[in-house]
Amino acid sequence: MPTISRIQRIKEYLSKRKLSQRRKVGVLVDGPNMLRKEFNINLKEIREILSEYGDIKIAKVFLNQYATEKLVEAIENQGFEPIVTSGDVDVRMAVEAMELIYNDSIDAVALVTRDADFKAVLMKAMEMGKETIIIGAEPGFSTALKNSADIAIVLNEDEEKEKGDVDEEEIIEV
Image (cartoon, rainbow, N blue to C red; front, side, top):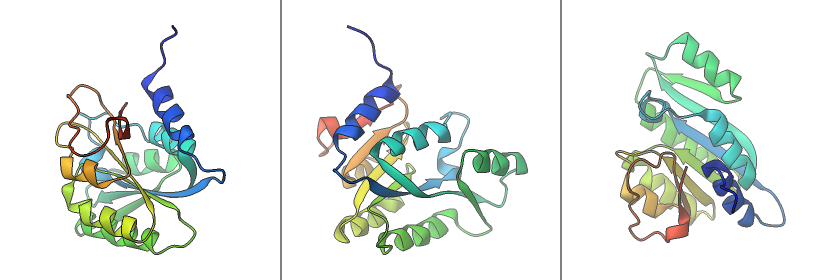
C-alpha cells in the first residue's frame, strides 16, 4: 500500500466534503500567534489545503508593528495580504472576521490561530450559517477552539491530539 503524505490525506478529506458548488473561503492568520520558528508554518501549505476545500477569496495575515519588512514581503509573495497593526492584533483580526461573517459572498471562515479568544468568532460564524475551519499547531492549540469549529486541522503531529467533543475524523493532523 503506497504511503500518502499528510498534506495529501487532508486534501482528500476536504475534497470529499466539497459540495457540488465550490465554497468561497475567507482565511485569516494570527501572525504573532502562528508565524513562529517553532511551528514552521508554511502559508503555501495552508493555501493548498484550503484550496482543496474551496476557492480562497480573502486571505489576510495580521501582524504587529514589530513585523520585519522581510516577513511582510514573504507574506505578500505567498498571496496573502499583510495587515500590520499598532494595536492588539487579536482585536483587529476579530473585526475582520466579523466582516467575513456578514459578507454574503463568503461561505466558509478559516482562522489560523491557537488562541481561545476566537471561540466567540467561530460561534457567531456558525450562528450566521458559515462553515468554520480552525487551523492551529501544538503545543497550546486551544481544545475549546478545536471543538467549536466544523473542521479542526492540527499543523503538526508531534503532540498527541486532543479529541474532546469533535469527531475523530474532524481533527486532522498535518
